Amino acid sequence: MVVDKGKKQKVEEESYIDEKLIFSIEKLQEIQDDLDKINEKASEEVLEIEQKYNKIRKPVYDKRNDIINSISDFWLTAFLSHPVLGDLLTEEDQKIFKFLSSIEVEDSKDVKFGYSITFNFKPNPFFENSKLSKTYTFLEDGPTKITATPIKWKEGKGIPNGVAQEKKGNKRSHAEESFFTWFSEVNKKDDSDDDENEVLEIQDEVAEIIKDDLWPNPLTYFTNVSSILHLLFP
Image (cartoon, rainbow, N blue to C red):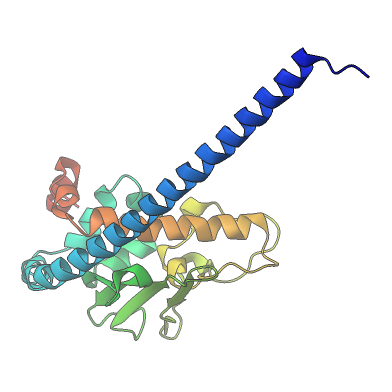
């Protein structure tokens, strides 16, 4: 049997190429592993810096709250001016927001584990709570754990427009739902339908907007021209 030298050479070349490719991929993987270690270390240092500056920011936020408390309907005005949050407040919600004295956003001691958003209220005719909080806890394995303060509604009161009660037949649009459902619907369930899970995803987005947009600089929305007019000429 005569071996075709051309085919033999081609097989040897392909074998060499394959070995070279495997060697290159292994080396690339080693480099990627080194980069991942560096990135992980960088992330840890960034979190440490964030925690450091959270402590520095705290007294400044407290000072800001003291001034905000002297301005009538500050948070209501800022919410209504926000392009997303403003659409979430019903007329009944706005009546409750008039008793909102301050909002606080606080990271966990280890910022990578989550944060909480707290609404502080003056005594009001709607519920007994002086504060309502919602906390997001990031678990290493599994979905984010979400907890919220149960609202202790006063007699004859409840989620505005009755949206806390399950409705049969036609579903309410998001625009008709009270903002305060944000404190009653927290975690996804395996047997939840797509609409229910969509609502929860929207509520997670609301938390991110409050934390990352409204809270850092609410003055941007409060000083909106239309907001000032609304405040001066309700």
